[in-house]
Image 1 (cartoon, rainbow, N blue to C red):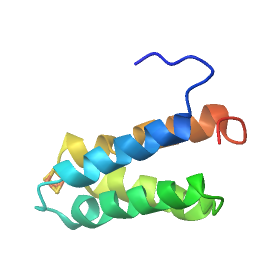
Image 2 (image 1 turned 180 degrees about the vertical axis):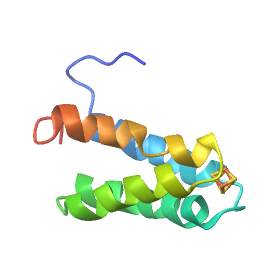
Image 3 (image 1 turned 90 degrees about the vertical axis):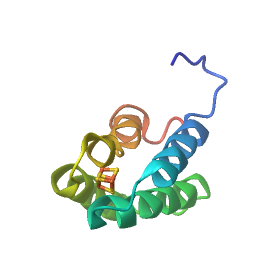
Image 4 (image 1 turned 30 degrees about the horizontal axis):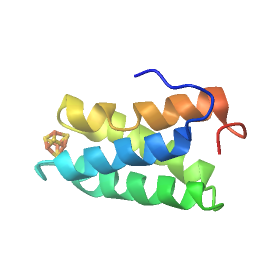
Length: 90
Ligand code: SF4
């Protein structure tokens, strides 16, 4: 996906997080519980309640604990946004 400078990247990240929460099949706990939590944390971040430490812990839980690629990849968009645009895009 390509965005210009007018796009709210946190809105994009919130949409991506909602997608993964919706698509989780529920077979393993890290993903079935973690993806809705990721969505909530991104929602909170957009509204001025950053919880960076919780996000970092959740990234690791999803990447290391999820059984398949869906859960493992769920945090990548948010992680990338934090690494490259924290404090700029919000
Ligand atoms: S990581 Fe894969 S197996 Fe686990 S709940 Fe998510 S979609 Fe299902």
